[in-house]
Length: 94
Image (tube, rainbow, N blue to C red; front, side, top):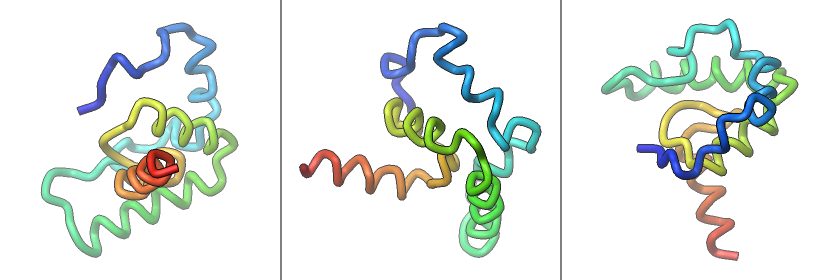
C-alpha cells in the first residue's frame, strides 16, 4: 500500500502535470491490472499502457511522482511496479 506520508501537499500546482497526461481520458484498467491477471494478457495490457506513455508529454513527471511516492500498482511513467522497484533499488545501492 502507498504511504500517504510520501504524497505531495494537496496543492493544485503539485498535480497540474496530470491534466496534460496522455492517459487522462483512457480507461484506468489499461494501467492497472485486474486481480489475478497474469501471462500474455497482462503483458499485452502493460504494452498498451506503455505505448500511451511513450507519446505522453508528461511521462517524466509521472515517473518522478511514482518513484517519489513509491506507487505500488500499475504502469506509471512508462514503467510497471517491478521496473520502478528496480530503479529504487539501484538508487538505494549507490
